Length: 138
Image 1 (cartoon, rainbow, N blue to C red):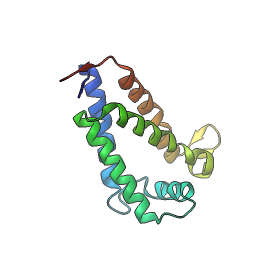
Image 2: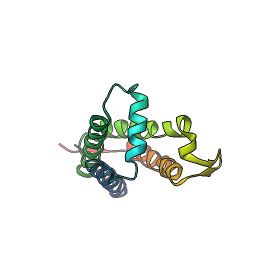
Image 3: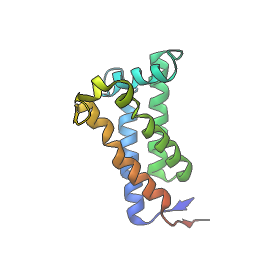
Image 4: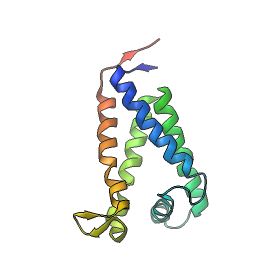
């Protein structure tokens, strides 16, 4: 296990809560504001080979696992890498669905576009946690 500094733990727990919350909503059809966006992106990435309901379920599980691991400080380095890859993939709609992301490209973001762009801050925070000096706990 890795022991983070107090600020690193606060950051890790807060990002974990966001992941847990957003992931949990995806278990309930239509409850997540990102439901349709996630389904469209998953369909694009899997060339429509993965049924929407399976794709969103797998995404929900993935996000909840990331959230729990960040909260409980489990496999932190690996989880941060997985989270960053996930967050980079959330930018796909900006490129492939610009009509959803922008009201007037490239500067005026829709609410969905803002939802995506805020991930820059989460990526930065995860990189900060990843690069922190750690104390190994035996």
